[in-house]
Length: 128
Image 1 (cartoon, one colour):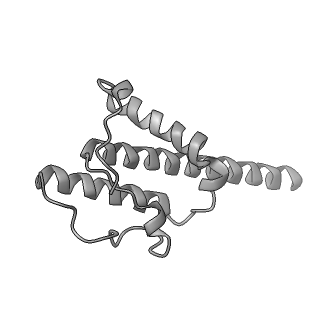
Image 2 (cartoon, helix red, strand yellow):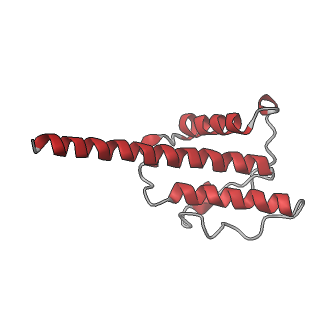
Image 3 (spheres, one colour):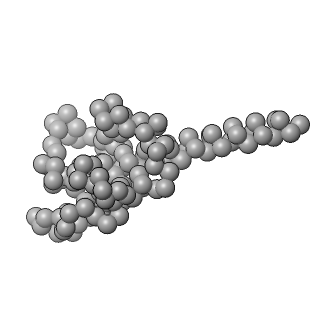
């Protein structure tokens, strides 16, 4: 489990700012940008986000108790879970991770819609 996250530079920031910072970190540090996210078209990013939300909910409902079990069953790839499932001791940090994953999923879906619209437009243009 990730140790308690307490970056002094992020104290006092609102949720949306924390999520934006985490999404930027995922892209810049981890390399998890749109090209990477496109490899997860089956809701995997949403499932990962849900796992972090559930971890945070547990921590808020049961303060001081350890998270139950290992990797949540909703985690999208149980084979690589030990590499990427990194819950924090801080429920806010888990919610920030979830929010950044949700933003990544929204961006992926929106990008997919743009591509499909372009394909449809090209198809319609060629039929005229």
